[in-house]
Length: 197
Image 1 (cartoon, rainbow, N blue to C red):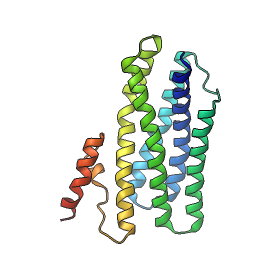
Image 2 (tube, rainbow, N blue to C red):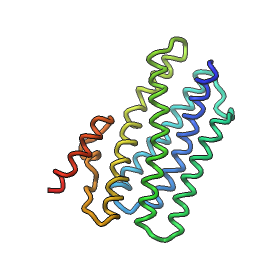
Image 3 (tube, one colour):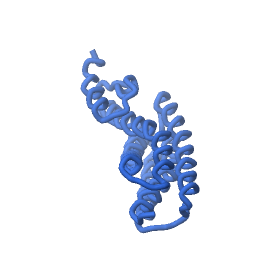
């Protein structure tokens, strides 16, 4: 297996593993009941994504325990996001902790989304025994990752708007319109003004 492909897969596995910890911590911060339900669902899905990645490693005969400098960086970032939420919780301001959690989830999901986009590119444009295995994993997970990123971006934006004393759209338009693409996310964001009327 190409060294850089192996690196991507290791980082993707680490991102999913860190995601479980990030969602677990974010759920300690959440105040909005709709967001809580969403993150509970995402935690369950992310736990399954770890299993999907472990299955990919098993099918390809790769070592899921292999450490690389890139994987260590991904782990450090995930641990830092967890620490940021814990700091916000200790501050004692529940709404501020919720906002920090939304931003931390958004940052984590940005990396996670990029991983799955790259794996999708590999599955589409590569040849070899592992291509079908990777394609199956992408087919199973990528839509959920799109939802995680775009919905969380909407939640973070609206929680910030609310914290600034303005009228927020909660749940955000991304949630209401079940957004799963950047283009749909942009349209949902534009529609928020009409939803306030």
